[in-house]
Amino acid sequence: MNILGLNCAYHESAVALIRDNQLIAAIEEERLNRVKHAKPALTENPNDIPWQAINTCLEMGNLLLSDIDIIAFSFNPLKRLHNNLNLNEQCIDGEWGTTEGEKKFYKKLIGIPDQIRALGFNGQFMWVDHCVAHSASAYYPSPFKEAAVISIDGIGESESVTIGGARDGKLFSLKEINYPNSLGLLWEKVSMFMGMSEYDACKVMSLASFGDPARFISQFHQFVKVNEDGFEMDINICQFRSNNFASFEQVFGLPALTDRAAIIRDYMDLAAALQELTSEILLNIVKHAAQLYPSKNVCLAGGVALNCVANTAIFEQGPFENIYIQPAANDAGTALGAALYAYHNIFYGHKNPAFESKDTYLGPGYSEEDVLASLSMFDLLYERSENVATEVAALIAAGKVVGWFQGRMEFGPRALGNRSLLADPRDPDMVKRMNLLVKHREDHRPFCPSVLKEDAKQWFDIRKDADAAHYMLMAYPVKPEQRALIPAVVHVDGTSRIQLVSAESNSKYHELISAFKALTGVPMLLNTSFNDREPIVCSPEDALKTFLRTKIDFLVIDNFIIRKKDLPQSASAKTATELV
Image (tube, rainbow, N blue to C red):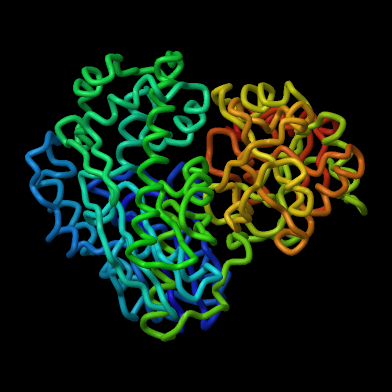
């Protein structure tokens, strides 16, 4: 049984492949086409099929498209057509919420099976509800036989939140919250109100730590009614399907920004209030889920489940003893969820423990031959290290920024030690250096520590053990006596979004951090995604291009160390033309 899971209805286009009883690969199209989010979410492009990800998955599985038995698509256009109610809201002509826009969206979606069949697929095509795909991505990789399951994002067909349960491989829904009541869309709207894109919720989250929520929380409550079992939003103020911010300007007493560089304390306070509102709502939802489906376990997915501050609050203050959060909680994860749902509901009647998540390294890996070929393309000098962990740890301890490229690429939005930029967490100037000279982004953006699992509780106040802490999905207070020792990974609120690293989860990364600890006494590294205003690098060629055009000091690919001081003039000359 060969199953492809496919997501491309909105954004974060992605593909997952199951061959027999094994998850072979899961890949985001953006890593291959080098366009962030793969494509914008538009009514006219849900049929932009992620062919590069499909072909890469098939290649990794030694399969042809004609070998696929089932394609499971993480959206149901028929359900969208029936549930898209006319709310008399303000919409952009021909776009979401208009008769013309919704018909266009439906027509593009419903034609996808024929598009794929024209290229050799002759198996079963299966529409999987978007929220079901999110829920499946959280439950089937979890270590739990039974659990409460919560999906919370912007919008699927019409739902923004589903609360349900799962037992022995079967998912069931108990409650839905539908559009226009959407935390995910509220984060998008506030992001745009602050002069950012709809995809910049992570930037708003980082700003929240600088602000005071008390200033604007009452204004949010004017149009967001928080209930014990959920929330309701006033669409006349939210106006999610328009570019009109007049209602926000009136409620908050602030002008909509056109340039995020103009952000001042007022907008930090606004972000802080949104974060407090989100944590309040999610805690209520989790408590209600425990009433609907009493269990010790809870599984989460959906883009809002990437909110590490809220995740920590609901786990530490909520009723559940154990939590699993899908690392690819955004829409990319629905490709995985759709494939797993099809597998368990068509082929395998129970929950198969073979699919329990051990790591996120599900993307392509590259052979030494591939690496050498890429190096030769750029006419670079390099050396093969016999003790790469010790040598690289010494470079980082000496203040160098290192691009670390190892093994298979991560699936999901976090770089977790295979496509990472690494630096010394002890350096108080490293945040500014990384943000301004390497990542070329806002100086308020924090950095995360990858910390040895066995040492984490000596440095961070971890009240309850959570598997999610392996994936930068939880934020913990840094112990007061340790904060001055690792200033580069302590956010302004005294917390860190940590990645626990064990020898079992990533042996080579664990070895590197252990070598750094042996040199410095600090069992962690600053870890950020290996990119520069682009998708995380996928291939050795991607890594070399980013290395050459930024202030990264060293690049390590497998056991090869590439040094900038060794760059020949011919390679340096490429940065201004061929590499941009």
